Structure formats: structure tokens, C-alpha cells
Amino acid sequence: MKTHRVALIPGDGIGRDVVDAAWSVLQALAARSGFALSGTEFPWSCAFYKETGRMMPEDGIETLRAFDAILLGAVGWPAEVPDSVSLHGLLLPIRKAFVQYANIRPHRLLPGVQGPLKAEGFDILCIRENTEGEYSGAGGRVHQGLDNEVAVETSIFTRKGVERIIRFGFEQARSRRGKLASVTKSNAQKYSMVFWDEITKQLAAEYPDVAVTSYHVDALAARMVMAPDSLDVIVASNLFGDILTDLGAAIQGGLGFAASANINPDRSAPSMFEPVHGSAPDIAGKGIANPMAAIWSGAMMLDHLGEKDAAARVMAAVSAVTAKGIGTVPGKDSTDAITAAVIAALTTE
Image 1 (cartoon, rainbow, N blue to C red):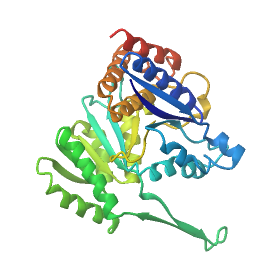
Image 2 (image 1 turned 180 degrees about the vertical axis):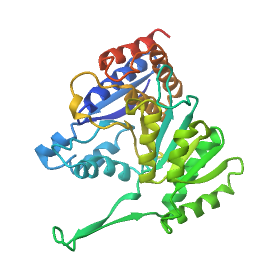
Image 3 (image 1 turned 60 degrees about the vertical axis):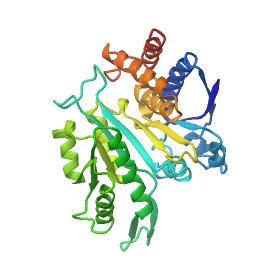
């Protein structure tokens, strides 16, 4: 029996609730699917930071390197630790150290979920560059607190980084409906975004079977609202992809349904899977967090680990549950009730 080693990082707030839920579902499935999941939990979080002064130990990256995948809950507790500390102390270092340059976020309505739009038949896959761009962390501040204070934030776009994420987007589009939307703001950002547009055009010649359209980010945001069913695969920079996928979460019914995967495509290091939502400290421990996004992320993890049939079974169970109206309205069903329903759907196939 093949065993997949998974690092579990519940993190902060409802991260504990949703990771426990997703792990229960995955374990129930593994028991019936001919493979095993071995999980090791790490307490790295804002609470860990308050105790140690670090979001994770100095050897945290090397510790994680031994695993096949990472399942993350949520990171952040702004009232206790600034987001700039928690993000740059845990999530971003993992993404960068393991070259998880492709952030994959699917946006579609699950059966029984009511979105805010008239359109219902959309199926969008957003590919976000995940290791450089606007989140490179290059810059600084001088003369702090004075009237001549200066803050500089420098976006870093490398040819290697831009080319590999756009190529990844083309490959995803080729395996789906053959349409790629490349997102920039090249009318205003005449260096980095024109660079992105030029590389998109160059790569398009290698993918004659994919219809590629370049959009300004504001126009693409409007299209996601007005005509989401016209979109297939979106590829965007770190910042633009981050913003657009929150819009994608909104049109698919809310952050409780938004899953994601941080992928190392060449598999030289573990990939990380997480719901898009935050830690929601106000409802932490109350048992009302929606675990669907975490469960969906778990299905993406199984798919990446090569357990494609098992991943499809998880999503079939999730769809069967939401089709019955369970887990479709925020706060209506408890975390445990939703989790139990998904497990029941798995075991009664």
C-alpha cells in the first residue's frame, strides 16, 4: 500500500477547524481506496510566533522538505500579530523555498450553491504567479515618521518566472477548453506589464490550438462579473491573481468554497494546498466554519499526489452534499455536520 506523507499546518483561527474536517474526509476515503495518508501536525502559527518570536522554526523549511505535500488551514491573527509578519514569516517563505510558482484556484458553482450572479454555468481556472512579482518583498522605508518619509516597493519580474507561469497557463488551457486570458495593466505599467504581454505573445506561437486574449485587469474584473461563462483559464501576476481570485470566490458563492493549490510543477519539492479564506478569528472554535474549501483543497492534493480517482470521488461527494443544501448557506450547518455528510456520501457510493 502506498503511503503519502502530509505535513498538516492548521495555523490560526478556523484553520484548525477546517484542516481537521478535511483530514477526516481524506482519511475516510484513503481507508477505502488502497492508499494511506500519514499526517504530521506542526503548530506553526501566530500563537507560535508570540511564544517564540518566529512563525516557524529556523529549520522549518528543511523539516517540510521531507513530506510529499502540505495541507494548510489559515494564517493570520491581525489583532495579535501584524499580517505583514505572519505572511512573510510562514506562507510566503514556503511558497518561495519550494518553488511553488503556480497558484491554482478553481472557480465554479457547486450544485445547490447560490451565487450572486445571474450566470451559473461558468468554470474558471485562475493561475496566479506565486513567487515573485508584486510580492517579492523588495523595497524599504527611509526617514520613518518624518514629513519626508519615503516608502518604495519594487515588483520583480524575471523572464524565467513570467515565461514559466504563462506556459503553465497555456498547458492548462490546452487540457481544458482551449482559451487563455492573460491579465496585465500594460497601459499604466509600461515596463513589467509590457514585458508580460510580450512574453505572452511569444509563447502563443507555440500554442496555436489555444485562443489567447490579453486583458487589462480592470476589464477582466468586469468580465468576470458580466460574462464569467466566457472565461476558461486566467493567468495573472501575483497581485492581480490574488485580487481576481477573491472576486472569483465571491461569484462562486463565497470564500467558504474557494480552494487553492500552490504547485511545484517539477515536483522537486512538496506542494501546498489551502483554502483561500482567512483565519476568521471571530468564529474560531465555534464549529460553524465551512470546511468545503479545505476539503476541495484536499481533493486537489490527492490529484497532485497521483490519486486522481480518489480526488474525483471527494468532489463527487462534495457535490452530492451541496446538492442537498448542506453547507450551502453560511452558518446554517455546523462544521461537523458538513464533514459527516461528506464522509457519508463517500461511504455510500
